[in-house]
Amino acid sequence: MTITSLSDNPFIKDKRESIDLLDHAFLILLSEKLRLVEKIIFLKHQSEQDVFPGEERKKDLNRILELSVELDLQKEFFEKILHLVLQGAVEQFERGYSDDQTEIMRQVCGGLALKDLRENLYNLDQSLCLILSERFRAVKLIGKLKKSKNIAPLDPDRWKIVLENKVRSASNLGIPKKLVEEIYNAIHEAALDIEAKVERF
Figure (tube, rainbow, N blue to C red):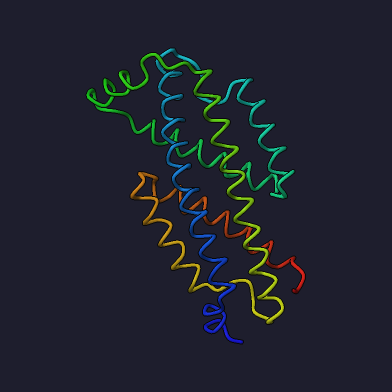
């Protein structure tokens, strides 16, 4: 079976549709996470606090990383995703605001408490973790079928198209191109690793 006929396989089409839907949900949550982190950084900056995670957030991150391991995600992989998002939000903040944007952020953040935002962030991280876990379940099933047909995990042409689609979808949600490329390249590397290790059907 060739790669072309594999793409017509109903099982593969179904799993790829699942991945596309999960990716859509992932990008929406990622966009909301960036908005939330931006508010946290703004509030911390306004009160002259260090913008990087405090002790409570570090505890939350450890709990999230434990969850990622329970869900069979590589801890280092999910840690990298979390780091990339924080780095992307910090870079966005460091580009600065106009006076009007600063005033809008003051109004948006007025009355918000860092503790509440941190809890929201924890919930979003859990959701991102669960979505990635489901995504990789579908990847595993695709990998099993590919292995049974002796098809290599990597299809560079297909990946290029997939990445372009993710960048396009992400730009509609206000997610910077560089960030979505870095995140999806990390996801793709993890997916290839999963496909390479699966057993045949």
